[in-house]
Length: 177
Figure 1: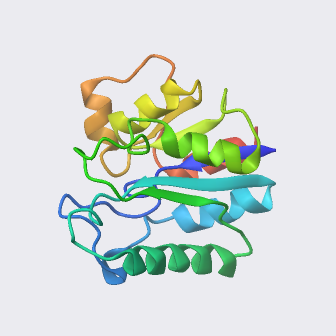
Figure 2: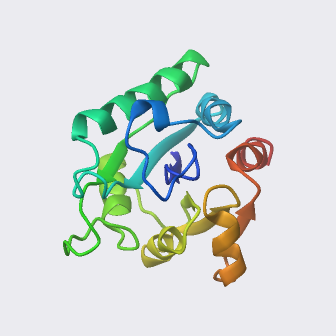
Figure 3: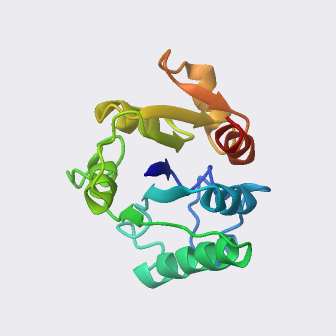
């Protein structure tokens, strides 16, 4: 199985320091939906692992998050692709869960769902927490420059981190290698 795991905000859709709180605020980054569809058509299983502390903070209900993910699936499906398992952490930073990145609980949940090892699996994110989560399970940390990616890169990333301009660039690399 060719598994690719993506962070959501800043990788698939535009991010906001004020949180993405409604379906109207959930705006795909140009090329990201097409990239997921192309990866899916090329035989990749594309899963998503996303921190969503806005739920714990009361900024939006779970139904709104579900609507965002339904929209993601609809858009990718409309291009002939498919989104695999989507997992989220609804907890706040001080809740002590094991799923909130940089902890690797969501990545382990995805691995368990698909019955795969995470060693070498690409986990694509835009923040230091994403890279830390990948390294915690021996996955390949991948940074995109979208979202918080440029800021993360400026602070320095582990030497084994792969860096791409955006999800579309990464998809072209994976599909044509």
